[in-house]
Length: 145
Image (cartoon, rainbow, N blue to C red; front, side, top):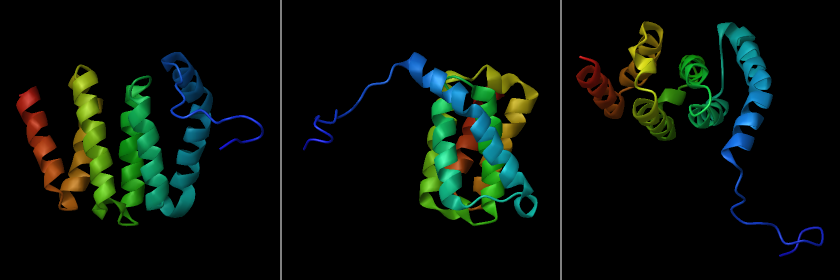
């Protein structure tokens, strides 16, 4: 099918450099979303918005791991009030995020603030009843013992 006289490209590849440039160009907007969400009812975010934000932060781990971790934790806290943490897609995204964090940024987790952030994030999902989050907490304990 042609669009506007040309055939759309399937699986368009964007270089890592362009992805990083776009991320840092967009980061002020992401911060603004967080600021507005903080002001809504003492901190509020709808589940679907939280999910998309966490997906973005999962990709941002490659460029900005500390912000990605802190933002994912904050967004999860804000979305917990809307029962987002009980959604199966939520735990799936957080498991993927955490595994990527452990694989690529283990040294960062040796820092007390970062370690506290990941523990806080996973504990939210443990309290929501997800055994996957408890497994990741045990994995963290084994790795950093």
